[in-house]
Amino acid sequence: MESIVVEARDRPYVEARVRAGILEQGSVDVLREIGVGQRMDREGIVHAGTQLRFDGTNHRIDFEALTGRKVMVYGQQEVVKDLIAQRVADDLPIHFGVSDVQLHDLTSTSPRVTYTDENGARQEIVADYIAGCDGYHGVSRGHIPAGHLTEFERIYPFAWFGILANAKPSSDELIYAHSPRGFALHSLRSDSVVRNYLQVAPGTDPNAMSDDEIWDEYDRRFALQDEPFTINRGEITERVVTPMRSWVVTPMRYERLMLAGDAAHTVPPTGAKGMNLAVADVVVLAEGLTKALQSNDESGLDQYSDIAVRRVWRAEHFSWWMTSMLHRFPPEHPEGDEFGLQMQLSQLRYYTSSEAAMRTLAENYVGLPFGAAL
Ligand code: DHB
Image (cartoon, rainbow, N blue to C red):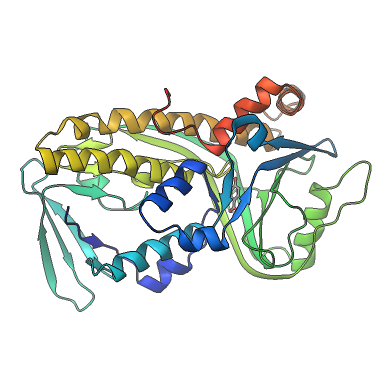
């Protein structure tokens, strides 16, 4: 199956942009199967569980015991690097730095993509199908006629302030913390680089706090009741504030254009589903395209959206639920009252004590197997 990739950014940009960091077991399996898992298996860090911290106490969710599955800590941009390296090694076309991308003739059997290449020359690709894998801000979706798509959206009254720092991880596993001062997450990228997040108000300036103020805030949010806990500090090398949103557009196909990943759906980051959903979309899409191109049978593509969207909604629910349970809502929000807080704490106690409840959290976190009823 021939394919051509066109990318608006340049290669250093996409290889350096820090994004999510957790791969579900199913995503790990896919990367191995397609032959790009070697560096991930060398440098990725397998986690068999995670920590939930609330009321100053720590609770472990044992993914492996509850589900038989684990997750892999491996940055999204590392996956991107590995995919690009493989493509380049295979001598397959990938064009960076393109602009003014337009899609044409989507209702015909030979849709086209036109773009300006990095040397300023106008180019045209005549294709059988187009995969719109260009994210929320991509151009693909805009080529679908108005009225064909239905959108669903939920905006949250908080954002994540993420830092990357040269510090030793303070825990063997990620810590998701619910605290009176708001949510905090301790994550990592290696044994010397941590990735941490603080719940902040939307629109917060990432440079508003000094390094010490940031670390002090982590210490307050991760504080334990019965023992001292301080987070390991180090040089902060990146700061970014990300708004939080749930958003879905359906169907994910219009004639010869298939949308995949963030071009069709975004999740709030809590629970790390974004990259995994994109992988899951592409697994279904690849099967559909293979059938269409090798057996002249479009049934897989006809089912693409229905199959992919079921997993999308499962992940939308899980991410919305984790977000709603772990963040402090502002007082003016309907969930920001004392009742809302008690609902969160009761859920947190239940999901860290009942085995059935813990398994529910765990199987969603590690990702339901491909082919599971969703
Ligand atoms: C990371 C991001 C997440 O959204 C999450 O739930 C866990 C980890 C991360 O960037 O490491």
